[in-house]
Image 1 (tube, rainbow, N blue to C red):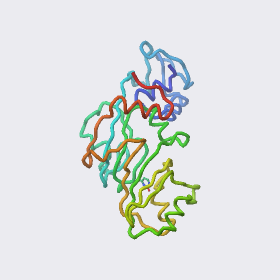
Image 2: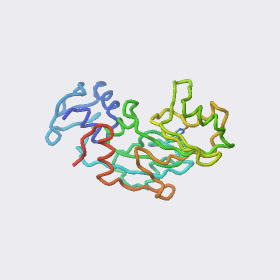
Image 3: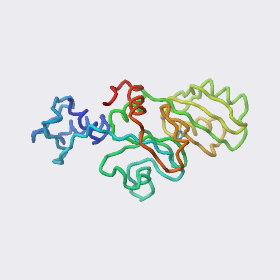
Image 4: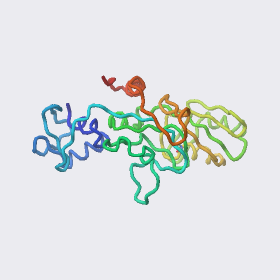
Length: 240
Ligand code: URA
């Protein structure tokens, strides 16, 4: 197995960050520094360390689906001591290095995946594989039919076009749209460009998974089948 894959699969960091760690000379195999991310090793026999800390081979990964409440930030830790999505786990899986997959704004609610499957997290957030996300968007006023049509045709933001996969008006001031994009504040920026303010933003689905049956702030583990469906959706082998 390649060294970068070993590190990402063991929850050290995303595959890209693992490449950087290796190239920076911070990783050793059997006490010798290795700087090639593609270095081939035997997970059961070789001893891998990052800056002298042994990295255990963790073939079993954790996949959690969280119903993120408002007021919680999507980071692993916060220097200002604010509540993070990881603090909602109440200490569960604290020995694992779980990462949120992508980011929801502090005031956005809904489906958020947490995992230590570095390769899956990397692919789910990579523009090439960007998975589908469905949002429910409550606005401060009714949306005109013309503006729904403008949104459907695509909006030019300062970082490029964004075109929803689907969009429908559920109520005069409530829009449901599906995007493959994961750029920062993308939904709010789309509406703001047409002069609307988003009052509530809720992610109804991420990669086909809905967290709406979970109470606010609670989470569940994905089934093996759900985890494998996600992995296969981004071209990864199913796990055993
Ligand atoms: N788009 C936004 O504007 N905010 C989010 O949290 C997610 C998508």
